[in-house]
Image 1: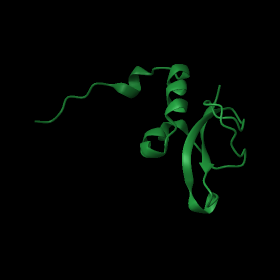
Image 2 (image 1 turned 120 degrees about the vertical axis):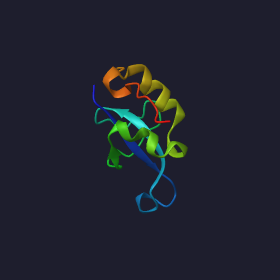
Image 3 (image 1 turned 180 degrees about the horizontal axis):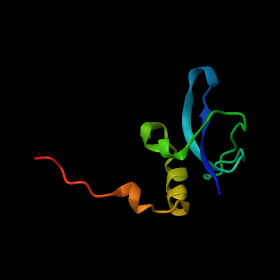
Image 4 (image 1 turned 90 degrees about the horizontal axis):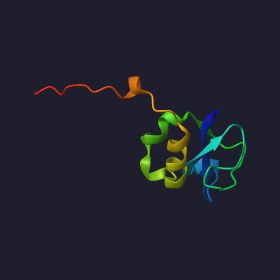
Amino acid sequence: MKHLMRAEYGPGGPEAGAKTWHIVSGDTGRAMCGRELDPGAETREPGRWGEQPELSCHTCGALFLREAPYLPDEHRYQEQQE
């Protein structure tokens, strides 16, 4: 199933930017946490989840991680330069 980040807007609307980022499954307007979102709100790929952690819905993030596959190639150990 395709996951996307979808914006929840505050009182300033889309012009003020996202108040909170949620995760939705497919093209639905319902976030994984249960919040109803505007289906026309801005979307982003879920790989951008960590860009603004203060704006990310914690519940959506936790539920998404339970569904997202662990891809070892994305988490390779790299030795640190001394």
